[in-house]
Image (cartoon, rainbow, N blue to C red; front, side, top):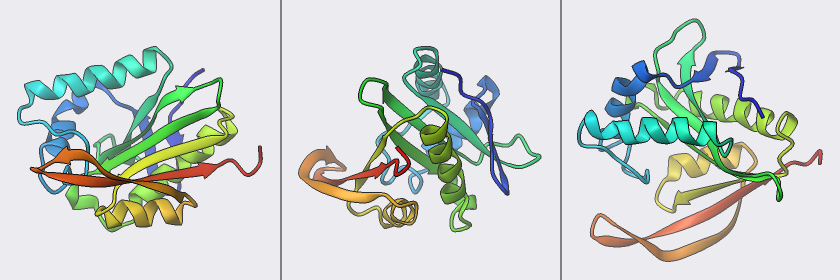
Length: 177
C-alpha cells in the first residue's frame, strides 16, 4: 500500500515533512483551530508527538495524513488524513484541520474530496468514518456536503473543557463497491 501525493483543482496534498512542525504547531496550538479537535499542543517540543504519530501510522500502513498546500506552494495550510485503516473490513477513519487564515474558502472540502477519491478508488475501502463534536457545525456541514451521513450520536461520551460533550458518528459508503 503506497500513499502518493494527491492533487485537486487548487491544492497539492503532499507528505508531511519534519520542516512542517512549525506550521503544525501553529495550527494545533491555536484555540480556535483546536476548539473541536481531539488534541492540542502548548509547545513546539510537544508537537513532536504528533509528527511521530504521522510517521508511525504511515510506516505501519494504518493511515496517512497529507499536508494541504496550495498548488505550486509547499506551505502547510492544514492537514487531512485517514487512519485506523482496517483492510479486513475495508474501512478507515478520516480527520482534518485547517489554519484559521484559510477557513471559509472550501479548501477542506476540496482536500477531503481528493482523499475520499483515493481511499475508495485506490485503496478499495468500502467505508470511511468520521467522529465530530455535535457543536462543530463547520465540520458537520463539510462532511454532509461530501455525502457523509450521521449514523448516530454518542451522548456525554467525552469530558472536555470541564463538561461532557456529545459526538456524532458519520460514515460515507463507497457506492461503486
